[in-house]
Length: 215
Length: 306
Image 1: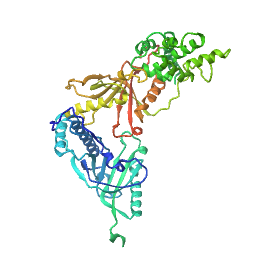
Image 2 (image 1 turned 60 degrees about the vertical axis):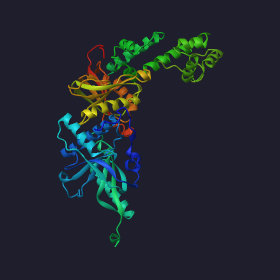
Image 3 (image 1 turned 120 degrees about the horizontal axis):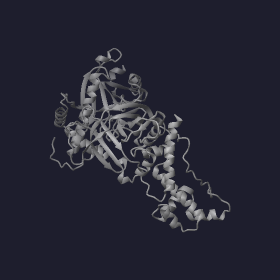
Image 4 (image 1 turned 30 degrees about the vertical axis):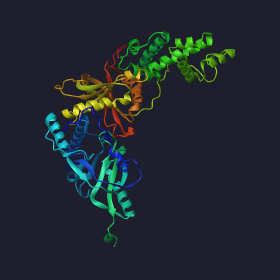
């Protein structure tokens, strides 16, 4: 890592929540908002949610984001609040696809100041200490857009009900979902919180309906 | 609850209360009082609060104030002398505390008492004494969702000591994490523990001790402000606390006053350990989940230190 800056400097804490308040709001009301592009640490995989590949991806992301944050902070370069884990689902129909074949991209948003070199340095730190052959997360830029968002309270198995509500809302607003751009942000840790108390933000990226759809 | 075990707790705490009452002019330290009760100093302040419903220092202050009230009634000595005897450095501080307890200033209290023939210690207004330890343990609103008994191996930890109010211990976590991150110690599910040694209602804020601990391997050496210590192995009562850290005392009170004696456990002479399962910087207080871990051993017959 670049340690040219004075180690005693305390960098200002970047709180990305404040940039798009709606995106992390715990409000139970439907939110309709626009957000710009974001930068994420990102790990993609295939497998059942909660399965081995999925759990490994979560562990990798948290290992990286905490090591990155505190290494940069210690070097006086950057400090930021860590945001919830998010998931972007692949373009498949969960009703007809076996859970073992679900494709997902797990992400944690980071400030745009985080560089690919810093992520590579973090990988080196982790591998040297733990002797792990980790595949580092990618630094990915996700496009912005218009979002409809609802807070889902309850087990993940019932997330489909919240997606249905969002689809109905989109229809009523003469909007259509943008294919492959629905996301979830997990406000609770499923290892620690009872299923009925799990909080998940469900986001549907939407756009104006095209004319030919109205015919 | 087993009445014998509960009574043993109450009996030992009552003995301390009697000791306090008989030695109000002495310097009453937690160490001295915990020895009197045969409780480990690591647990005494929490056990006392769980049984009595107020901290040791609040209890001592109240007994001194109530004694002062009796002196006001029975003597004509100056208020300043009574204030100093009650352990207050200034008459103003004494007046404020007195008014909080009784609703009256010392002089108006004395006047009212002395002008009301036959008035007893109930005195004017609704003021009444309540310095008896209740036979029933206080009813506790608790956030405990799960309690387990675990056997821990001894753990070597690196730690940063924080001196100051518990609410400010985040600086110790920042320090240990900025030390650990470049060494790769935050990867792969780090094990972190907090140790809160003191009762914030009893210990002056600047002397409250808290250790932010991170489990490390044997090859780690201490440096600068990073110390090394061991978290004792053995049996622990591990309670899951859901909600704000500020409500830990309710869960501790339940464990100390109810669960531990009811299940024939005795506290060991080692500190409690807290494990935080989510990040307080990114989690709303109501969604925080923590484990409160109290080192225990099976109670043997008779009184043992614990």
